[in-house]
Image 1 (cartoon, rainbow, N blue to C red):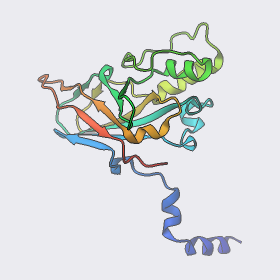
Image 2 (tube, rainbow, N blue to C red):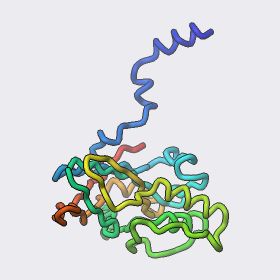
Image 3 (tube, rainbow, N blue to C red):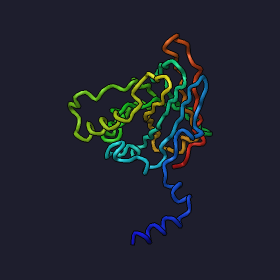
Image 4 (cartoon, helix red, strand yellow):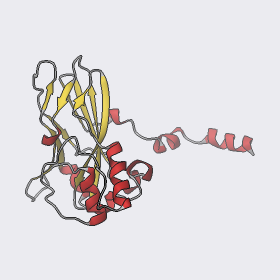
Length: 212
């Protein structure tokens, strides 16, 4: 039986494995790079990417919220300070007013997913995201969800030299996930920590985001 399985595997086309293998995020075209810093964005556009072991058992995707995995590859000799308060998702859909969305904290994601809370989705959020605290007044599911999201969220404002870090940003798209293809991730405020010299802003066009 084992011999038959091995023969079957050997006869499979190479592409059968490539299609199921995860893409290397460092090869994505949704990026901006200059001054020896590359920023790559990988929006999660399909429900099946929201794995329970990564985000917890309650899928905020069903509440209309999207996760964007953002990679920072710093090839400089100096660390870079990131001001996450200024990060925005800028949506420019045809025949619609431009929208500027600030990222949601894990607590806000849990609120909108589990409590159906309403708040201003254009409001800037504290960064790095605050801790979960004691969880007083919240359900067990809420506490578990915020804990899981804090573990994967972008929670640092320092990009170490010659290192790559990544983490998720969360945005409320109100179920309009296709709007991501008319969007830019805008990261305007970074500076070298050694001499305080500012970097030019980064603007990542998400039009070519893989539909996966």
